[in-house]
Length: 143
Image (cartoon, rainbow, N blue to C red; front, side):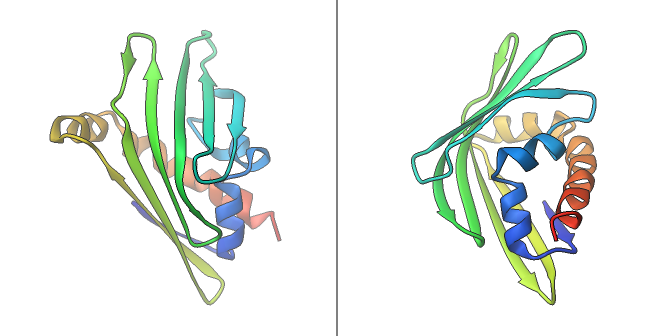
């Protein structure tokens, strides 16, 4: 996944790693995020809990493997919801700034083809685009 933002990469990096920004853009618009915990260091963990209006929760948890502010972020991640927990997958995000515009490239590596296909078929693309639109609004207000 690749997206450009009209903001310095340090803003985009911070918006992707600091709870005060994450709660404003991450996840589906219909969900709240009552838990947003980040220990941003190699070996540090994060936990994001999303809640629907019906009270159903799903969770993203992971461990940071590489933190190079504001250039690169790598972490292992697991998604869980009632009745399902994914295998851990690897997320690699790079932040390249040119002329005040940041290109964010995120690569997700799954342990199996079946896990990858399941993630792709989950509708992730339909959720990421609106979330990235909200991320663009957040970084636009950080100047």
